Image (cartoon, rainbow, N blue to C red; front, side, top):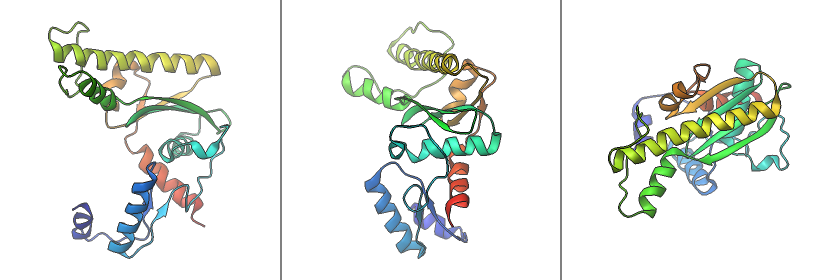
Amino acid sequence: LWLKYISDQNFTFKDIIIGSVVPDITQELKSALNNFFKIKPYVIAEDIKVNFPTELEVPSEIGTDRIVNALCAWRLYNQPAVIIDFGTATTFDVVGQRGIYLGGVIAPGVNLSINALHSAAARLPRIAITKQEEVIGKNTVSAMSSGIYWGYIGLIKNILHKIKSELNYKMLLLATGGLSDLFINEVSKDIIVNKDLTITGLFIAYEEGKY
């Protein structure tokens, strides 16, 4: 359906870029796009190398989303940064003073945690996360919402504190992903939300690595 929708918009494509961390789906998507639009897609990190240095023990292990977030943060803001990405996992990626990807933190994503609670405990419902004004829940749903909301705020604050303590220099704080607006204001007013960070990073990687 989404292929037909894109086709119906009469967009003109020069190239197609894929950023994916699920190999089986990547190949299916690449084939579908190629067959539908008659354009061979570029897969970031497979067809196009991301030109960004790292200090990782095994650089190939890093997900495409995380490395293009780091690339985009450095190219756009040109300063050390921590990028918080609210996706399937909640990730923290660190770019150091010399524009090198230092590493990061991977925690369970918000919706992953909600689904795990629902799946593992039969009497706990599946909930939609919302901002909670009070910590003490008066019913099951508000108690679960409080645990997720305030729990993740505590997680984010503590991890940022630990990162700052380890590096001991000023860092830009960036957030991206669908749930970033929900949490960030409670964490720090200094965090910049850029919902297009990953998409922009994919484009930058394509522009820098296509030739």
